[in-house]
Image (cartoon, rainbow, N blue to C red; front, side, top):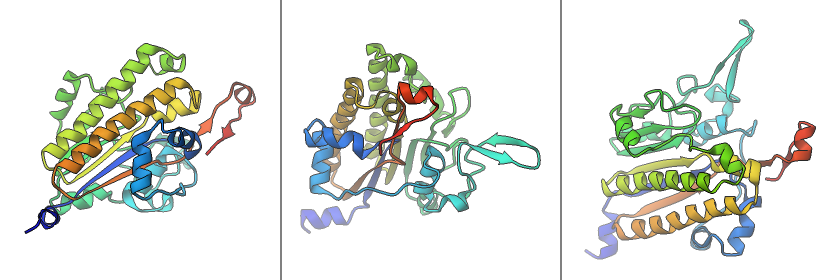
Length: 274
């Protein structure tokens, strides 16, 4: 049996990396200037395209549409809240209100091991054949992991759903940049651990690149974060290539990005850039 046939006899590994609110309009100039060499390499050696998002173009329902394959008409939500017309009220959307099974549900039912990290609007966490860490908008005050004991481990390493210093970052704080990079380190460490433990499917979303692009757009600090992501991506590619299993790596975004400008903010408007 050849090395190639041995690899094909093993179960494939699928890794999905989500970049919330990541616009081609923003990152394409960095890619072509070779500021993001690993993303450029994936584009050159793989397949890439511009995807059509959902309407409304929001984090919720977009990630649920991606993970379930259903349209926003079927999942039961068109945004972050769900109106209750008769009660003249609204409720905040969570995973219990979103209809339809996700790809990790089907894989878990088929006995594949899955690791889901940081996907927005996945709280309460689902019981899966593996690990589940809910994402935005919940906080560490709730049981956001499956199994529950995983939360204690994450607390010990200071894993945070919402990085410290978000608004400090918007003021271009270097301390906030250090915190962002640390949280990126932790999330990629989770991917490496899942690969080492022979998981079959990993779905990880980096949510707060959305906020950076919304408020700072092509600022050097935003580029620093993307270059740091790209560095980790290169290390991940090396691991995937050396672990002896056939694999698929997908990088996807839920929508483009709106740049909030000071002039537009005065008028309650924004500029659509992707």
